[in-house]
Image (cartoon, rainbow, N blue to C red):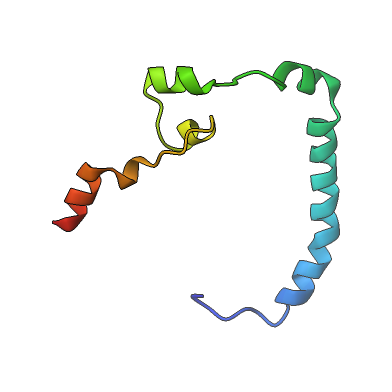
Length: 83
């Protein structure tokens, strides 16, 4: 920490928490209970495992399809780390 916390930090945080909670609840309501939002976003953008491999997807996107692969553990990367 660059500077020690102020003497009023704890109370400042406690004072603002109700406002933060209110905003979070409003956002949650807009996103999770809004039928239009749900209808437009649910089930879209699903990437199947076979298509991801065929397209050369890697990293987190590939792992999200269920493929257990980490490109940073490949032989070429390990050889570079040895340098």
